[in-house]
Image (cartoon, rainbow, N blue to C red; front, side, top):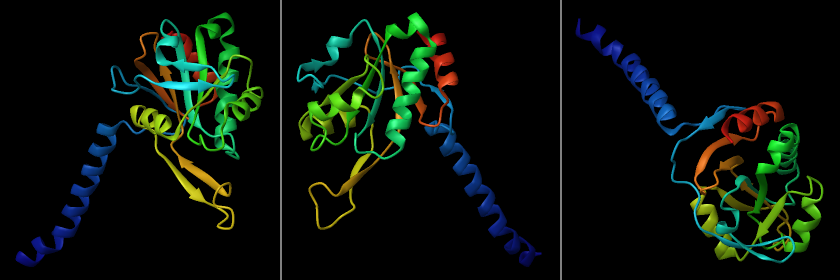
Length: 203
């Protein structure tokens, strides 16, 4: 009898581990690919003071009264960033006149290379309404923290430490309300049609 109980212990531990993993997943609201995640009054966002692609100083208060669709990335990104920005642009186009109520904002995580001029050229690929923001390393780290963004420099070419690197980073689209609070967030795998549909329902 005792030996049978001992044999059950590994299986009981496995069940407990699986249950714990499910509870962790649900409590942290980890989005599945392409999923829309509504978050209520999550503590994401906050004051910032950055520079746009024209060299003008911009703060969070300049966007009050307008919705923002915010994405963090970098212009040297080979795939995920341009794809996600294109999806944002397509979704806003699908909204027609309602799309003008939302300002698409790209915030660099690579201020060393993403100067206002570089961002100005980069934003042209996605539409005339896109705003690119950069700033000092300290200012970018501050806004990353406020938006809970993960961003880490990864060397690619040891012979060129200044330019030979990429960035590992989280890839999330944030919908911020006219009051500066987050309404929802979306992962980068969301389709333009689905994004447009959810934005229309929320603005």
